[in-house]
Image (cartoon, rainbow, N blue to C red; front, top):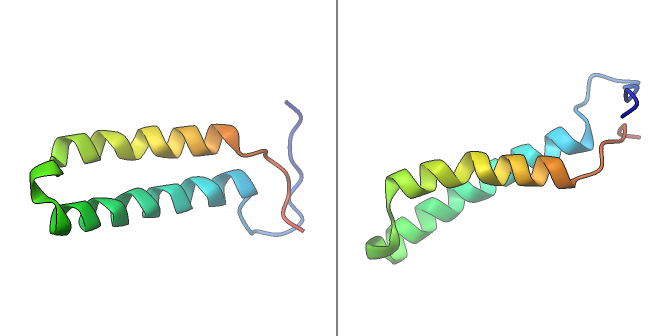
Length: 66
């Protein structure tokens, strides 16, 4: 894969998407813990976080922000 040239210090779309995925999983964990505590398991949610970050980071096309 070719290197992406960044004209500014803003992060790439891939990094931004992975960060948003991390935030979404964290907020979802809090939501599930408060509404359905029987479905919440801290170890499962801790394992889900890096999987979601990797998956979204892998799927989003890396291109410079404009």
